Length: 196
Image (tube, rainbow, N blue to C red; front, side):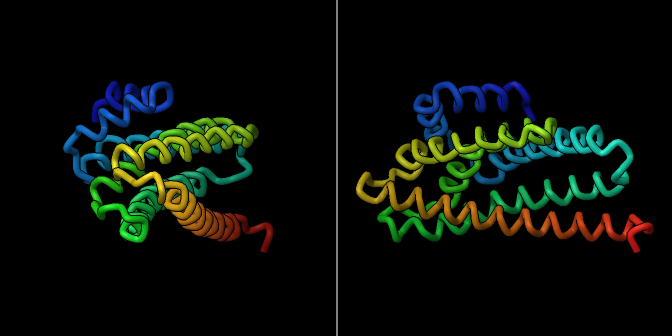
């Protein structure tokens, strides 16, 4: 894991996304390499930021074991969400006259999530500033640009493909958030004998 490479890729996707997508297009990386060298390091960073933010905010109201367990579960579900999103979107490609290629679709989904990953780090550290999550919407723009470079999406089907893809991603993450929230609520209930 090269933190300098991760930082440069994220910075370039935010500042010069057109140029960075061309670079990504020329790389022969597989889904396993992208997961290991980009997605997982970011998710670890999100988990660390969320743990720190929750620890500082809770001030002993929530047991540390609950915060730690929730952070680990949320991180695991985030990894699963990226992977599941890529699988479903890859299955959609042929419906939009795009060639099916899971490695390419995984690259597109993973690197498009850059803005979302960064906004999740900020919200994790500063949970009171939830409005910072809106910065994650820049991921839609990254996905839009990436569909041309990575999937060679025809202009005629690009709008529909991006809209459907993001509805799928939102649906997946809504379900995963519900799962994390339910688990966290159950853990708080179990760990708080006063309420029973």
